[in-house]
Image 1 (cartoon, one colour):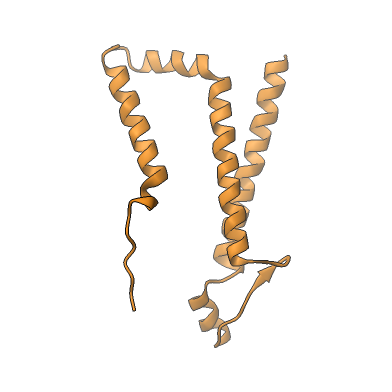
Image 2: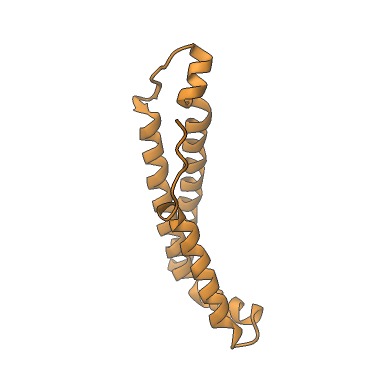
Length: 125
């Protein structure tokens, strides 16, 4: 019963964090407009705040919520490790393919997480 309650609490917190991520993303996209959009709308550069927090501040909140969600997802996987491995073994019946798929999956996951640090942006003047 303790494990079921713990899982429910973690899942509930994960749902709240996902909803907060959506909300902070909407704040940045639709409420606190980017510089070019606010110039079009107001004719000049304006500084916008929501609850005393700037667009960049909301970006930081969004980032930290993402870190929190990642930690909760990892905890969720750890707590469900036996079902994960059982389903994986049924999904990939050939033992020789399992390590290959695991390495590919982990490599793709790390690439998706860290590609911003290996890319160079295009600068327009």
